[in-house]
Length: 83
Image (cartoon, rainbow, N blue to C red; front, side, top):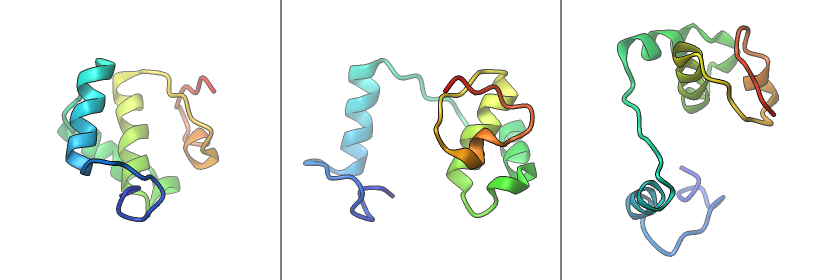
């Protein structure tokens, strides 16, 4: 979406960029489990931003801290925020 809306410029397609990032940065891609999907819909503070809701829900379900400057995400109750 960032590439599509001109907020991120890339010399390759979005799919190619994701493949490169995953390969070169040893990123682990997690599936969206039913628990994450349901929890993301319960985060009313993040309604209208499904990507942020999925990110926050994943951190909550996995009990992982999240690094973000986004005040809306930081305000999610129970979310551990590092930054």
